[in-house]
Length: 278
Image: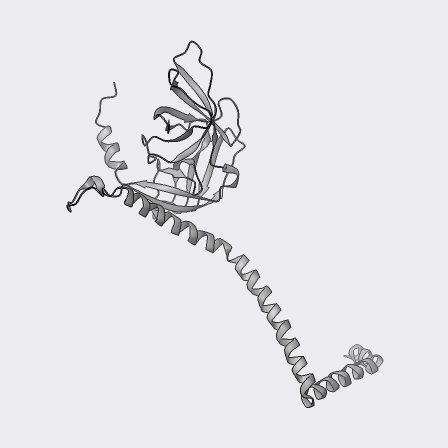
């Protein structure tokens, strides 16, 4: 207390100056219309700028929630689009036909962990059993291209075996002529934007820039874009070609994915399990 009193006593002239200055400003603004108007306008301008910057900051902090909402809405739109594609406009009668029921629905999920530099890359997403995620479900990118398959699932999380994994194989075809092949990665290089299609019969004509899509055999719906052919392969004594493609999907920028629910997956799996293994 004694030190505070000494400090005030030492700088009393400065404190009096501040008090008189503030008092003078208050009296001037209160008793003069012009100065009052200028002060109010300047204050409003400063407060307005402060609120604007605060709103920008709040909007930035809210981007994660906005992105989650947009991904969810896009997934709903994709599902509706698939449903519309199954409607046969040539039919004029209303019938209950299970074949025209929507087979696929999309569930948006956020990527919380990803790798692209390993031999076997795994992706983690923020959806799990409570959201209806099950092992084996196909996963695609909201932009373009396949991502992989759901591998393991916990209550609220799931891991995806990325396309960038030595054990991942996806049935695809060349859109122009429906030639079937198996999409694989990492056999000749580990570029996250390139892959290969194996088992292409060498008597088919393959052109650079031909589009590759999913075949519909397996968990993926047919016609999902995968990439474009960048190397047509070389025909040797073998009956099949291995061709290179540039992937549409850039795994290094993957933030959201769509997990595809196949309505008939369990039924198909149960039915096919009754077939003989030979």
